[in-house]
Image 1 (cartoon, rainbow, N blue to C red):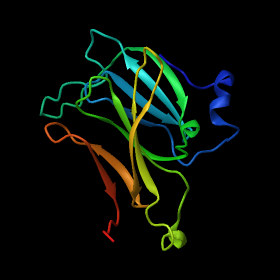
Image 2: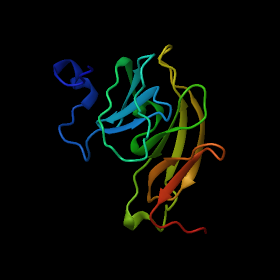
Image 3: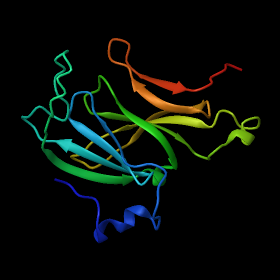
Amino acid sequence: MHCFEGPEWLHLRRGRESFARGPLVKVDPQGRFGGVLVYGFQMIILKAAEGGSGLVGDDDGFGSGGAISARVESSYIFNLGDMDMKHVKDFTFVHGYIEPVLVILHEQKLTWAGHVSWKHHACMISALSISTTLKQHPHIWSAVNLPHDSYNLLAVPSPIGGVLVISANFNLL
């Protein structure tokens, strides 16, 4: 069990008491890793223990809804703000890599409806290669100038692969 609350973890909040949303949890498609976005900009990487079913279970096709338990071997935390990812909207793990790749949808500067006529491509995605043994997460690629109203990422499985960015009103200009 990993607990990220209490007086020893207050530094993660950076002085804030309230947040727009709660933690966002996603799992690697192979079940090797899990990612938790807490306090809007802190990413916690949880490594599943070897030999088990990992963090995801087999789909039986009947929607049994049975609970799956997994043992977390180790974890580490890094600040996305230190990597200039200040306004994170979503993240996902990508299919088909030997080491897990985390793709993050974010804005460097917030935009709003009155600001759209001046700056309508404010979002970007950044990919990080995750290594829990070295506790490193190097930036491997990014895509900029995505629509300001992009809000979700979907990992596309092989043979196509990649990430699909979901946006409310996308127009090619």
